[in-house]
Image (tube, rainbow, N blue to C red; front, side):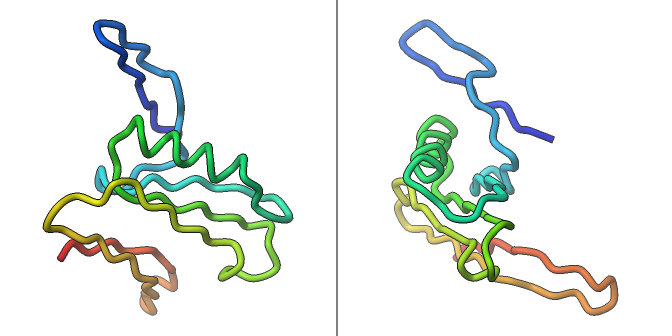
Amino acid sequence: MKVPIAIQYEDLTVPRSYEADFIVRGDIVVEVKATSSFGPLEARQLQTYLRFSGCPLGLLLNFGSLTLAEGIKRIVNNFPEGGLTQVRYERNERSRTDSLVADKD
């Protein structure tokens, strides 16, 4: 399900200007792609989503790359003072699922 991102300029608000793939805990914008490689257009799109959503961190995940490590790009947007978000990979053996978990220091 896409998450709407609004644009506000002075008194004008456009409610569904952009749609991010996911926003995790109100802090991380996740965009999912399936292309052979990343280009500047995908990174710029995520930077725009970060700026208008106010989220400090964005992850661009590309399932079309050869390896998972090649398919992850992390983009930072004005980190908040006094806090740092750490993202780690976690494997749940019981349910056999993988996930990205965000921890705040």
